[in-house]
Each structure stands twice: as structure tokens, then as C-alpha cells.
Length: 494
Image 1 (cartoon, rainbow, N blue to C red):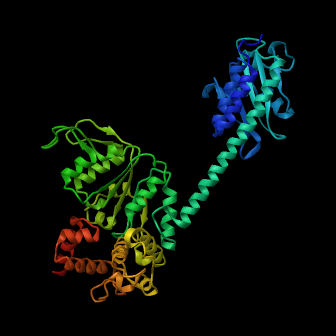
Image 2 (spheres, rainbow, N blue to C red; image 1 turned 180 degrees about the horizontal axis):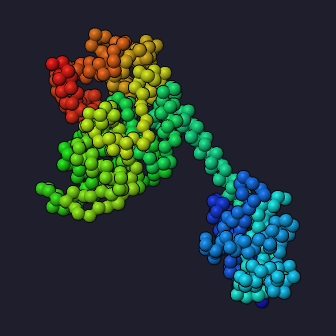
Image 3 (cartoon, rainbow, N blue to C red; image 1 turned 90 degrees about the vertical axis):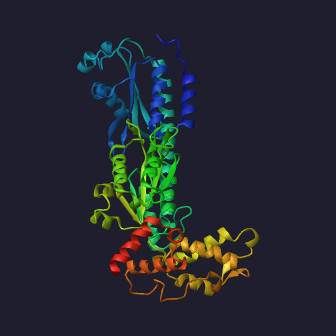
């Protein structure tokens, strides 16, 4: 007796809608199977498909009202029916298993008390790709010959829906591959460059986009570490959640702890209400810890706990809170050396340094200098200065030959200043106002990197008449970093 709710046209209409709305193959199969089971008032069912790498083997790709524990046994029991469908390409319908000469004597079917079975092939064009199996264990005669046209139509539509979904998935994967290739070759939005050095950076960035691995960005000041951190976040799987940047050298320890982890009302003077910390604000997103080497030993311990346990504790609170945050950190100090000098925890270093991306200084990517210069020209030659539209050959040569100790940040400042100073529609070399005194610039060949750094820092400090705050701001470093370096050089000269 047919179900009173049997409506094949409505069911086929729903499957047609599935073809147009679902784009994931697994979801397509689950929806089609559900419609077939409910329409025919079956009790259980599953869909078999070819294994991707072996056309001779089949695997269950979707099941209905069958637990994972039951699945293997049910597939084994139904093997004789399914094998006949796969071999012949014809549907099989068992009205009553006990009276069916083909399967009535099958011990497994008798033991499991299967009463009625329907199984139809799945075809893509003329190729057999699988089967849809339904059965009933509580009532005989659940399926009749009048159901076969409907079930065959379901199978045909399922094959079309599956092909559409797989085609979409293939196109999506290809698009992702091509996007990754474009990013590898031409970079990310806002990060300009085509040199071999910057392409290596793009390659590593592309590989870490869709992971939650911690990333350490190292390199000199002004190389664009925060820009890279933002690019990783906004091109990755966490892009729809917050990106929070923290400069670790800008606050005293007590304030930094409150900023990072939050505090409870009354935890200290001025704590007039509960406050959520930046780690909580970045939940499911990314937190960027700039100049992580500036963290005090106590803050290093607190950060390690977050990375190990995924938990934070607000200042003055006893309970912990779970956070899901990707950590990207940056430093222009050699952390490995600080670990050796016992100034930075080695266990924290390895936690932060799952993937290291070293950003090359501008002097190691000179082919990118004209590209960057024109990018910044477009940025600043606007409004009343929009008539400035290029560089003279001597200006480009000056840009290429300068050592750029302040890297991309210094280049940007130079172009912004030159746009203001330019007297015509092109920027000349003298508009750049680049230093030319080689005796004090760290452009001298053969000097170690540390000596170049020392000379440039001291020169900058001299130009600011010894003002530490102004010097640190001009260099893009923290006052603590500058004090550390000055003390190091002072003790070395004694």
C-alpha cells in the first residue's frame, strides 16, 4: 500500500531546487537521499559512489537513519542487491524478501529481518557511478513497481546535481589555485613588489593564509611588518573576524597587561568597570603583537599561557576565559640572540615562531624601488598637487642608489615630501632631499649590518639633538628599544 503522502512531482521539484541551490557534493547527496526516503516512506538508505582513485571500488558517501556503527553491517548485508545493480545497471525492487527467490534465502537479509528493498543505479551520461539503496524492516511491500520510475528519476537528477556541485567545487579549487599563483607572483593588496626577495615573502604568506599557525615577522624597522600581518589576516579564513594590532613597547607593563587581557572592576585604581582585553576583542580573529621583544618577563609568561591553553585571565579576576585567536608577532631585534642572552623565554620563542617570515630590507629589493615610488606618488600627488605625475631620470637613479636605512617607511616619507617640494610636473633629484654625506651614512660598503644600524641611529639622534622620543618616532621603534641599543653601544665603547 502506498504512502498517502506519496507525491513524486513535489519530490522531484524539490530535488530540482537542490540542483540550483546546493553547491557542495556532500550536501547534495544528503538532501536527495532524504527526499527519496521520505517520499517513499522508507526507513533507511545510503548512496554509494565510485572512489575517486579507483573505478572498481565504491564507498558510502551519504546515509539516512543509519548510525556510523551500523553502516558497515548494513552495507555488508545489502551487498548482493547492490552488486546486482552495479553489475547490470538495472534497478532492483524486492516487494517481500521472504517470497523473493533471489534474496529470500539470503541468511543476512533474513537475520536482519529486511522486508522490502529498492535499489537503483546512478549514471553520469552512460557511465555507472554508483547506486541509491533504500529498505524497510518493519513492513512488507513498502516498495512497488510504480515507485521505480520515480526512484530512477531521482537517481538521474541526483547525478546531474552531483555533477554540477563537483564542477563548481573544481572551479572553486582552480580559482583558489590561480589566486594563490597571482598572489605569489604579484603580491597582496597594498604590498608592492616583483623582486625575487619579495616573491619569496608572497610565497610563504600564501601558504599560511588558511592555517592558524603562529607567524613571526622579522626584519628591520620600516619593512612593512604590520602590512604583511594585515594581508595574512584579510586574505585568510579569519578575514570576517577582528584584526587587532598592539604595539608592545608603547605601554608600561601594568597597563599593557590590562590592555591585552582586560581587568575586573576594582582591580586597581581607576578600574571603575569590567573591561574586555584585546585578546577577547580579537576572538576568532587575529592579534598582531608588534615588537614582541619588548615584553617583560612576566608578560612573556602570561602570553605563553594564552598560546598553550587558549585561555586568558583578566587582571583581578579568578576565573579564566577561552579565546580562539591567531597570533602574528613581529620584531626588529634578533629574538634568537635574546633567547641566548636569557632576555626572552625560549619556550615562548618557539611557540611564536611556528612560521617565520623575514622581510627583506629595501636595499635588497632595489628592482621594487621605482614601483614603490610610483605607488606613493599616486597616493600623495592629489588635490592641489595632482599635477606632479612622474620622476626625472636623475631622481629615479637617486632613489635606486640610496641605501634606505629606514626602508619602505623612509621611502614613503621621502616621496610625500618631494611631492610638496616639487616645482614642476616631475620630481627631480634635489626634491628628494636625500642625505649625501657618505661619511656618516651607513651606505658604506663592507660594513657589518649592526655597525650600519649604529651609525644611522646615532646620526638620526644627532639630527634630533639627542631627543630620544623624537628619534624613536622617526625611526619607527620604541623608546625602550632605543635605550637598549644606546646602552649596548655605550658599554661596548667603554
